[in-house]
Each structure stands twice: as C-alpha cells, then as structure tokens.
Length: 226
Image (cartoon, rainbow, N blue to C red; front, side, top):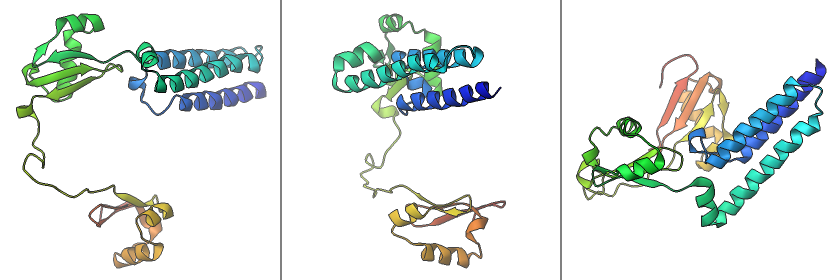
C-alpha cells in the first residue's frame, strides 16, 4: 500500500511539472505536437500506478525524455518559422469579404455547421458581416467584422481617453497583499485608515480592490459590497 501511495505522489508531481513545462496555453490552444505529448505522458503515468511490479524509474524515464523533447522543440520553434509550420501548422482564411471559402474548409476538414456555430458563439449571425474569418491552428475561429459592423470605439469618436491601468487587489480572504500595496504607492497605514472609516477590520474583508480611478471596492466575508 505504501509503495502505491509513494508511486502515485511521485508520478503526480512529475506529471504536474511536465505539464507546466508546456507553457501557459489552454488545452484548446495546444499544438498537435503538444497534444500528443500530453496524451502519451498521461498514458505513461497510469501504467506504473496500475502495475507496481514495474520499476518506477522505467516509468519516469520515458516521461523525462518526452518532457525534454517538448521543451527542446518548443525552444527551437521560437527561432525557426519552418519548424513552427511543421509543428503547429498555419492559420487558414475560411471567410473572405463575407463569402465562405469552400476549398479552404475542405483543406481543414471543417464543416459548415462547425463554422456557423463558432460564428454564433462570437455573436455573429450573418456571414456577410464578416470581412475575414481565420481558422487558427488551435481550431478556434478568429473573426474580423467589416468596418461598418464593428463596435464604435473612442478613437472613432475623436476621443483620447487616458490609460486606465490595472486594478490592484489589496486584501484577499482577510489577508493584506503587501506587495500590491507597495506597487500602488500606498502603505498599510493608508489602508487601515480607509477600513476604519467604514468600521471594518482586514480579517472581515473577503476582497478589497483598488480601482484605476482610485476608488476602493470592498467585499465583506459574509455580506454585500461596500
């Protein structure tokens, strides 16, 4: 029993490290090579947990080789357009100026139902509103609407709003995030004063966020927002 627990813990953490080495992409954004490596690693990880007679090193070694191969090829692909094309493929334009390119759909083995479904997911109901529809290497559809169908932006109205920046989380689950306070140019004394004005203690705060406009949003542990 102890051997099984030991194997499971070791393999779990090793697989976790291996997956982290593959980067921060979502599952749907993995290249075919990344996806195959992930499947093989999962299969290799299951074998030693089911068959305890197999030495642990014999199970870990193939995963090490795959992880190293993944990191090496990913690094080489950063500097080689040809290798990126081989491993990841290329995006395909499947809609151009409101017309679906049947030939490109066939190349991608992508049917109309899938195309229309992805358009609807992006809030597009008419193909004729699309200037370009690009099928990415991840299988997702990127949609560029025609100019007169795009949402109005401040630039279209001749406005130049200032950059808003990112909000800063100052308290999370009752604990003060000191690093964010420092980055915001504030200190704990300032935060304590704001909380005192509302008669709240830090441990009573579930989430406190300082907005880009300087306003402090507070969500109590078991109550509404302030």
